[in-house]
Length: 279
DNA sequence: GTCTATGTTTGCGG
DNA sequence: TCCGCAAACATAGA
Image 1: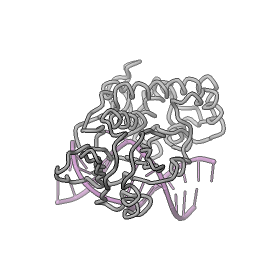
Image 2: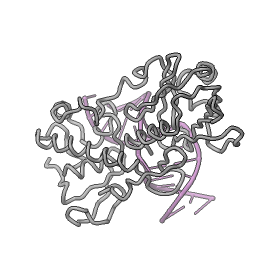
Image 3: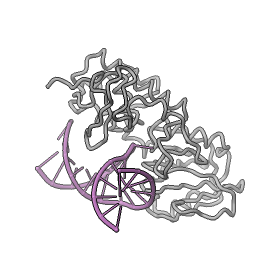
């Protein structure tokens, strides 16, 4: 289930497949709730005869830039993915939206759990305006993170998962970043020293860049796993230090990794490297 | 068959 | 502001 590195991988693969430059012949919606805005009929009508000029990402959103000017956005949520199909290929189970391109290919949005959403908007900010800073942007400095952390009393883990605080992190990369920076997920954000905030800043960028380099994290082989375009799998699984490694030795100190639940989310830590915060 | 967990997000009540 | 819970769904594994 895609976080920033996985979403960026999908964007990169769509670009590599030559989707930008293609015109849209038509769009057909098979599961109405997949279209968040506008209604499915208006969605299909507005997409027709536009050209995809570029594809980019903001947080976990994929942005298709269209001409005449319009933005098409997708959020993959848990199981959303894209498939490119030749004309005439029969629609498979869980293909909820088919965009026919004028080069004969079809861009299909496939989503087993049906949580993924598509949006049309005049500007991408209409949809992404609530998001916090991009962790890999130049503007996201250690100083800025320290200031944002100092203003919040929440537990670190739920705060880092909050897309309005910082965009793009999910369960995997938050656990990895906290392990990397030796911070406990229950630690209250405002108790971090500037040095610890700087360490967290470095860790966040490190784990995201590593995920990106490895084309994302694919954990198993079932429907619920991350696949990029054409079911391409990521290679980051073997680089994870704590996520879903309960009972296995910590790569740093060899103590067994523990699993706990924080903010209703499964969480993985090394109890030795990430000591419990003092109350 | 049954129960639980799942990498996301939103909305509600307190 | 913050927290816990439920819901949106389908599937895999125990």
